[in-house]
Length: 316
Image (cartoon, rainbow, N blue to C red):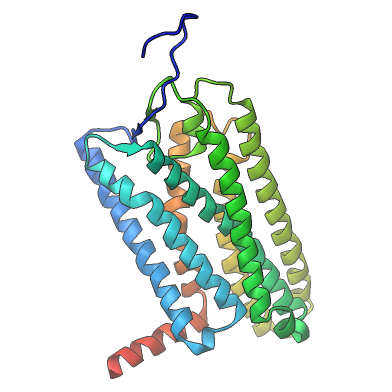
């Protein structure tokens, strides 16, 4: 780029970025392609199965499975926002993404991930109402309330995504157009800006920290009451069933919030791109793959629904 009179690089509007992805030769790229493709196919199959089961089986038409279906939908969508492009880039030499394409990918990725953070908190509240206030559960969590809570999750995700996208893509990019990542995300994009990014980092840490801390508090308070209620139960079988169900949710929550916190809500998260790539793979691919397994393998209702669906298919 031609220099300004003051010696700095001129700020030219970028038309495209290059996603550098993972380092390594053709063999490494081929190995990563095979690994990511396998994980992505398992994630797609698992989440689609959960969506179909909870839609077709009338016994799973309850608030808990309504939220589970939405969790599977979010996992399916945000992994699909990233990995078709990432898989193509692993076998491509150019790895180019347009400026508009990069902004679009980031917008939907941020929207879906933030919505999932809110949804996990809502799912904890749902379990709290079911276990600690069972007599009022059908009224407190009636379909209109569940739909409103889900709409609130999407609205919160959309608001965060609009703020993050507008702050990030309004920056002038002039140092390079090579993104040291396999997806368009805030930390690697801030590295390319030729302006002071202090406000952007504060916005990222502030918003992400507020969302993570707020939703985590809802989860911890809900499960604090749930644990106390379960421990007061006299039936050992009932305690085991409830701990198993809630344990699945806590496993998913811990995996998701832990990795997102490492990536976005701590000072210095922007500093290590190599660590960021590994963490990003975990919460954008591994967790969407694990969630259906966590909820189905430890859930007898889902297993029974899968068996009934198989029997219905065999009969036809």
